Image (tube, rainbow, N blue to C red; front, side, top):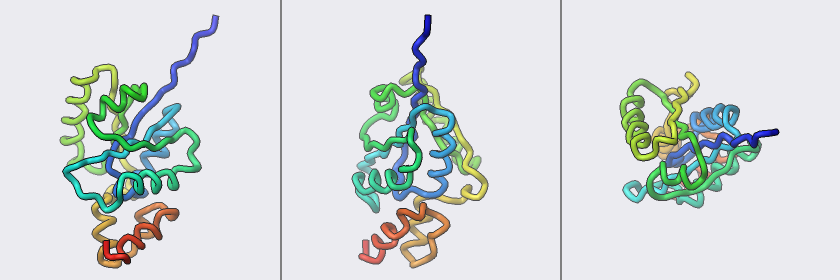
Length: 167
């Protein structure tokens, strides 16, 4: 008698505006421990993103195309509802510094209250990316700074073009 193995499905939610090498680090490591990882691009109406949700999905798809068990989708609404709809058991969150933990812990706790069947796992970003955020990438790029060691090479020109066109 053989039991059917349940896939370990996780989501990694965020705005990814744009995706950074820090995000990619968390994605690559998460993809090794999950059967399927869905990068969940949040449509946040309170923020004015640099890239549209369609652009962000396309940029992430370029960056993860070599990772076979990673998928990308945009979503709106509660993260736990999106996770439930995709059959996910895990929400992946990246931590850069201790200062991220308090906020992330609160989010994890409310998510657990709303959906006790879905756990949150925290992955600390590799040390070389602990300072890195999408906001920093945008700030550096807006002043014409070098972002080659901040974003995946495959999206570098797209980010630079966005600023060369005057956002």
